[in-house]
Image 1 (cartoon, helix red, strand yellow):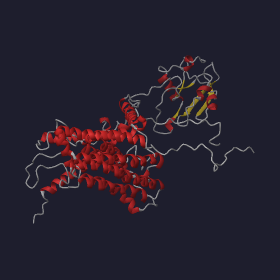
Image 2 (cartoon, chains in turn blue, cyan):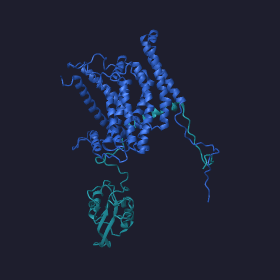
Image 3 (spheres, helix red, strand yellow):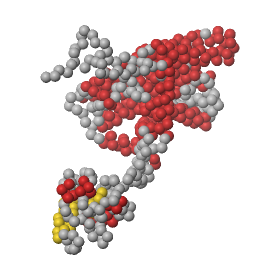
Image 4 (tube, chains in turn red, purple):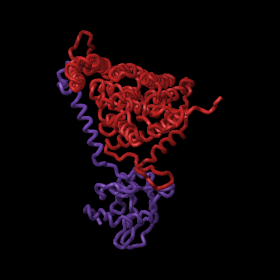
Length: 417
Length: 177
């Protein structure tokens, strides 16, 4: 009996090691980037002092994540007496495990060129679980489990702010899962696969990213992923000004760190999904070559293109944080149910119709004409739908005071004694 | 007060136009504002390397100094007006008979507890001979509480340190000499 792990297992373990290490480092450095962006937008300089420890080398503050991490790990891990201890401890573990496990199905590059190692399938894809046919479902199932972490944390804290944060989070995430799923369905319909690498390859083959072919789906998915990652302007679960810290009010030390890292990983996941499903993944016209021939240079270029796009989306996430104020909760719900849901449905119907009648379109207009029509029709729907949503949907509840005095009004007169 | 009270002027919110309802102009203006600030010059002063600019050093209220007269003697005549005016009671003066013929008293010792001081400038206001002044030194640090109680020598040395950068205010502000 052969007790040695198979080459495939070793390859998977190497990928997991690279991915987890990379993600944790990325999350730490994204915190620094976020602080820089916050500072620059506010005309400050941001953290620029911490460099190599015990020396005077500053490196523009690149040592900051290490200092931040050490500080929060060394802090007291305080558990209040009034919490449900089991669930309180489980919550940060659940949320972090779920947000890390998501990356099993997310490709972080294209494929390696053939290595020639016996027992390894060639070429080796940049994906921990390459055979997973339901990659998209896996991602969405696990991102829903991450919500349980938030809920558990809020509820087990036995604290009104934590509870309100958890409550808001559950309502918000349930509401935005639907537009998120609708935006996704259009892409799945067009690509004909639930595999994320197949979705990327489909965009690379046709050269038309789904952001151009399905603008409405792109907008709906983008807005919904902001809400799903609980980033501003949809960060109601935390809403420092109203809820102290929301669901993690009662957490400190390393448990709080796990929550914060998981939150950042949510944003990274959202950026990965946006890039992979709508912005062409590793594809860039004229640079990355076709999906079939792979060299080491191309493999690196594709990895670079994908990373650059993801960084761009993350920077957009961070810039948005300082650009718009937080939504009120009724406005948030209005946006989800009255705007995003109908728009998502419109996108889905359009994509389904275009895909269904593509043979007829090709017969009538020729191959190029059909391609142009397949892009033009969704754009027409995009503009019409957007205008209709703007005209028909109230932006929120009208809360101006009622000015006509009715029979139930109480007289509030100043009485002189 | 009822909503229908005539003394209330109700301001009407402008109804949203088509552009606002489509959210696009708001989207663009929000993003351009933040993007502009992202690259605009920063207001941060990197403190230890870069000194903050003090608007007018003559009216800045920083560390105290005891001025010297033309002969290098302490100007103070130990009249206790500053100690009386001080709301934080941080000035302690021990007066003695002056060794010089032009005044009756002089401070044998003069202590200011810089940790207790609230830098209100009342001592400077009260001084009849412009002997005590607040300089524009703003980074006052020390390693112990004792070190932060400045004695006469220390206060005179602050004068020696700052007299070139900040001439005595009495001349500049037309005060008594």
